[in-house]
Image 1 (cartoon, rainbow, N blue to C red):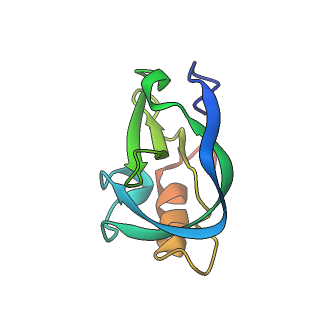
Image 2: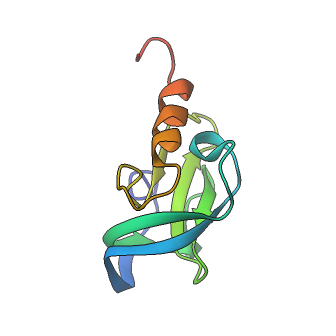
Length: 110
């Protein structure tokens, strides 16, 4: 999502395969009603370069070092993504994140 809308994707600096992190968030979209921060399981080595995150995307989640963990389109809020695995058993509130995502989809998609 970040790259499609003009952001630069870079090495995350540290491989995060099977590691958990505390993720802070804005409480909107897929994060509505969730504990803050939440524990998320990460399996990635790339990230959106924060300085290049396009204005059309709102940063909705991040970790302590500033790595972007969630974005949401400002005009089309059903375009939303996270940089962790909500389906992992180590991610707290993973099922609720998925429910929140499905609830916000336009009825024409569901």
